[in-house]
Length: 432
Image 1 (cartoon, rainbow, N blue to C red):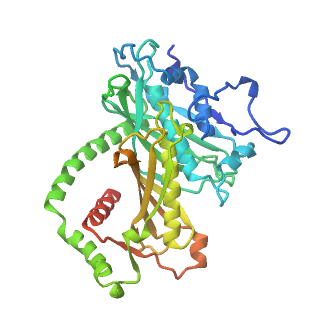
Image 2: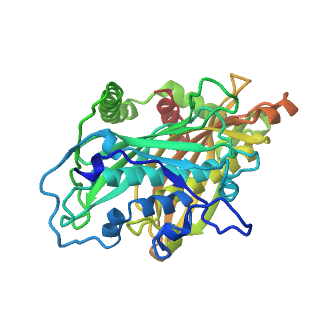
Image 3: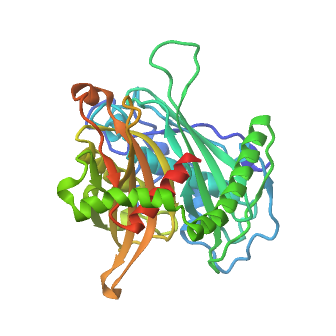
């Protein structure tokens, strides 16, 4: 029997620090492999656990046999063959709990984004693997992340579970859906409400040629799996059609919306003393940080781990929302993430953020939409290229709003045509 056809057991997540206290709840250390030289082990307990669990699969990716032939025949797999579950034992492993705790005794969202990307990547590898170990493995990269909605706060004191599986495949692309659940704090009917849903798109490349490579087919079995597959198929077709329509809209121009956005910005630029005090120029909401990408942040392919990039982008977006609102922000969703170019070890990476637009009509939950753009800067070549685009939505924490109920979230207006186009494009994408 193919090992992939056997339902996998949940993977327990343990803290990656040794305990200074006697009797610290940890796994059986004698059974754990030494992974000190594996990339990624330094930044997440989840990466550590996932690589231990499927070490044989990953060992081939550390030094791929480039001279081996590609997979000659595509397999047909079911979603259950790629399904994986990980468990965070927050209720008993207090060191793990401290690794994930934020100032409000909730799970750090940036760190969770890192883990979601690691699990999605492992699931994509599992789906694309074949039974013939003599063939050349595929190079899988994160292409994008669809809307990711936080449905309820995630406590760091209660055990957490993430379940994921492949729900759709194209010729060389794979969509993975992840579901984060946490038991309710009070005794109810025993159900585990969903705290967060996320969909990741991975694309396959041939290790030797770098070109798009076909992936194993998917055969949904249950009604739920068929429904998810059809929904993803329809969404993919809509995405392709929208790209064509966007080109026409750009050519024709939505003059009214465009001009209305620019009109208020012109007052700020030309007559600042007369500008609306409840508005602010987009450029005045910007923040930025920079870093050199280190070897400890690389993934199995030697490139910078996509989850690490999302983690850093989220922390900058959170800071931007905080500085803008003047109150502690509360994360709501990742609107979209595009991974446009790979980021390498040693790259000089610059994250630039801004408040793209706000929605304050609903005073109970004003919305702050943040854009973060990552640039790979190469001073020697006098070049700077966009590698990633991230879009996040925040509101303000209820307790912070209660203390300052009269405060209004300001409207953001563009000063340039390019800024106006970015705002309109994001508003339209968010409305879909």
